[in-house]
Structure formats: C-alpha cells, structure tokens
Image (cartoon, rainbow, N blue to C red; front, side):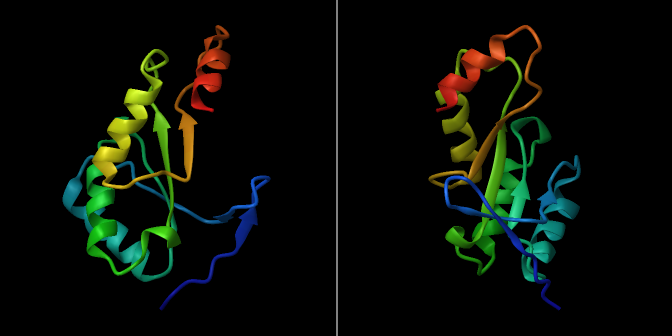
Length: 124
C-alpha cells in the first residue's frame, strides 16, 4: 500500500515532502531493507548524515529502487568540526550517496561560539 504524503512549498519554490524517513541505524542490513520498504510505500524524503554511517547504504537503496532521483528529497549534514572543509565534506557526501546533488544540507550540531555563521556563509 503506497502512502500519500503532502508537501511543503519552500521559499525557493521547491517542494519538500512533509514526512520523511531518518536513516540513523548501526545495522546496515535492516536499514537497507527499511529504506527499500519506505520507498515502496511512498516515502520520498530521506535524512542521513556522515556520522550515521548510512550515506552509502541509502545511495545503494535508491539506486536499487525504481524511484527516479528527481522524485526523492535527500537531506544530509555537514559534520561538526568540518567548518574549514565545507566543500570537501559536501563532495564526500555526494560521493557516498552516489548522487550529483542533495536537496537540503544542514549544519549538524552548530556551535554556540558564533563560528556557525561563517560556516553557514560557506554553505551558500
């Protein structure tokens, strides 16, 4: 049975699914199957991060599915401590996911010392 999820229109004009599937899980086998099942029932937003260790697994599950990349909204994160290697971090995530772009890239655990502002500027 496929789920019907609504979307939220972002200021950029893009649409983001209103429900998503988080991929933090230390066990690769069950997570791969869970992602495949989520895709089968209609999930189209997936959240991951380098620290979760699931970017490669998520990418493989997406490639193994019949769901086109443009129909999936991918979110990943800039790891804490990567403020000086923003571009390298993004390129590493893209490589692990096996995609050309992510739809949303977040700062994972922004610091309270103000350095997150400069990091944010590097993201754009």
